[in-house]
Length: 223
Image (cartoon, rainbow, N blue to C red):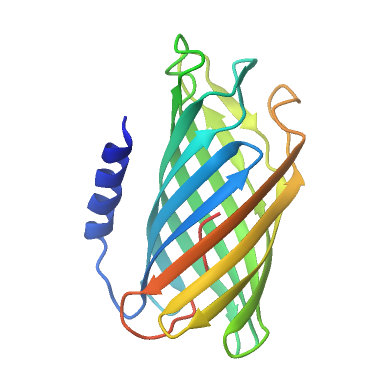
């Protein structure tokens, strides 16, 4: 599946959602222990005062993957997923959100092409994000993600990546309908064989635009 196919699927899913009071479109660029580069597009729609629904598309160039007891350092991955957002608490000073992201992963395995199917899978990312209002336009974010990954194919692995507490910290600056964000992710990780991951890190820069022409309060929901 090529990058063009993923972009088509993303905008097809985006068209299914109806933009109401608060709708956001954004993108981010990142680098991590797993990926040399990672680009993400997302659309988030506020369904009610506390519930939001969105879709996201992610593409990355592989730095390191461990699949079927083999290290993969050459290839790319694509993710298509849905994001469910629940606002647990919202005050003038802070907000607390629970988000659930489910994504299908397609891995273009250039290094070991004899294992094309086994590298596909599902990732589920439940996470909590706390946002503290530092000033009228600046917010501090902190939170944790418990990621679980499952590998499909002829040799399925349902605990390819066990739940791990990945800590988020970052800042976002909001100006009218524009929001800019800097985020870091760190924490221990482990997989089915015990050596898939030992420690994870990621740095991300993001931009989000309010499609309705007014400032909004939806945080960056994607991890």
